[in-house]
Length: 242
Image (cartoon, rainbow, N blue to C red; front, side, top):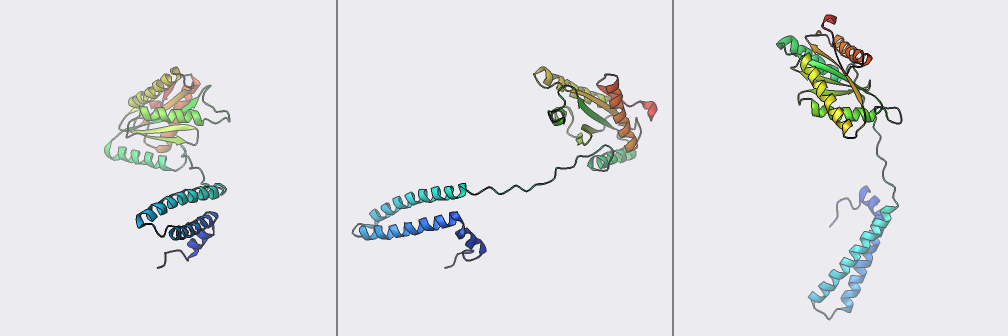
């Protein structure tokens, strides 16, 4: 009887490895000792021989496991293949967020379904890590957003170190309420001993502030920075800018 792979490349490599050689050597000694045991206990019954063989097999199993563990202890782990980090979407470049925005605009054009856009930016004493990045602040912002937006809303982390939320079937008022819920959650986190993170939001809605993707995003971004400039947490795109 032949065993699949025993004579092939994989089988040869396995037997040639340190663990394979150790296992083969221990197995050979096991067979030799079983033969010697049968000769010495030749006058005993089958049950007694089987019991002795079982004890011997158990001992050799422990020896084999220890030997294999020792062999593999010196083998360095295989390197994990490097993969480039996923590219973040941008407010002003094509990508998944822009495609979803275009879909919402088309839905509004066909069925008069409104939607809101909110752009959030984090700053303040706790906003930057030691290396100058805002990873921790944005992670906290993202976690708070998950608890303050609806299932149908979509949040996108942006390369501009901001977060954009697309919220279908609501207008500017509901968009502001969504931002206020987020700010309330962050205040609760700070009072519980968390980092102090100041968040500003810019809110616009379609069709209140227009129905062009670029114009809506620029208005939301502009509303955010106007709010920052006057020390307010939330800014809303002006209707006269339409």
